[in-house]
Length: 455
Ligand code: UDP
Image 1 (cartoon, rainbow, N blue to C red):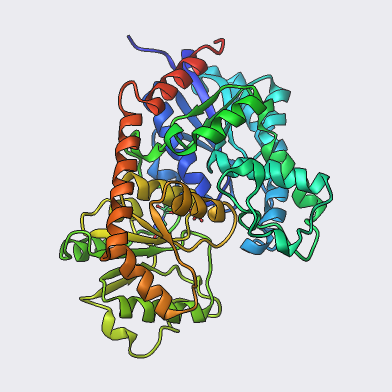
Image 2 (cartoon, rainbow, N blue to C red; image 1 turned 45 degrees about the horizontal axis):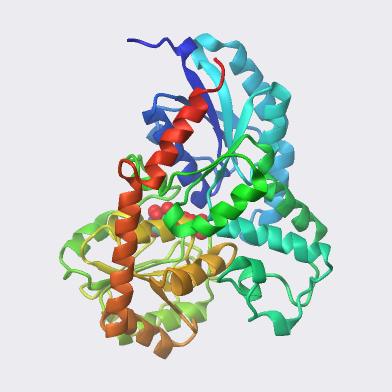
């Protein structure tokens, strides 16, 4: 039976324009499209994505005015978030109002799904009388840290006493105060607290979709269900549900796959710190010598401008060049999911971004954790202390420690146990995505939920 477009349910997606957020939103679009919904993506002009990779979606731009004079460096991210939320409201509202009048072309716009960071979408949805749902692109346990920070702020416990840093946070299971990244010497600016409040106020939507699973996040999901009192759908890991087109902002260098093809199984350490983290020259140098000392083959992603003070790898130490070629490769951006799925890759030195974490777990690749900021500290703690599928890198500016940690993971007995645990976790995740598994069931529930919205 042919369903006319005017009778189809359309879902409007509002991604936050950074790699680690846009990727899961587009993956969700692909999943919902495969379930029969039309997908419309409202994207900012700032950090605009490559729409040509997704011919099955309709795209429309949001006027964000972000590039006009605002410092958009990562250190100023909370100002960028605030600007996007203030500036895009009118644009989203006007464009959607037009689309809703044009059912012939756009179907029945039944719901907005917005990244938790793009909280302005909630008021647009309310204004237009459309349902709104939130996408959590980070873990449920990280969302809980927002509530703890807000509680500490309300109790005037910030700045935090230095002596508390290594203490466990009572309500956060495995996390220490240190993992919350609360300042010890300064106040948290009021604007940042307001932002955390807006981002964590997701219970006012009618449901929450999460790129996580019960296996990874069960305790936090149950507690958030109590708190928010709206349905929560943990349907992840998204990237394993339907094959998605490339969502990369940077061009992937696929030549590294041919190099991986020549390496022994489980022998290569893959190194990447994601799309935003930057390091100092000293860390580049110590990592290089640590890799050299470990004796393991490596594939290392160094993003352009991600080493402070240089364009790319000009500051690699003399002598390290001998390790590049047969022994190791350096690329600007890799096809990461393919790399992690390659049989030659046996370990991942990662910044512990949530997508990277999920991608590594799904391919049973054990990790070495080198978190930098944001949710990465909490993710690292879960990787090393809860799921126990990775090792902590205890010192980033010490070649001895780096070399030894790589060996511990890649060749020593300790690494074998970590590898077994990550394999067990991968199997659990596989099961959860199969028929009658928790994520599979949650996706069916989500589909039924959206189909229950009136036409
Ligand atoms: N990624 C990639 N190639 C690279 C490095 C990263 O495709 O060379 C992708 C990776 O697969 C992941 C995303 O970029 O999907 C990074 O997201 P994550 O949440 O791990 O970290 P963020 O970039 O947000 O810090």
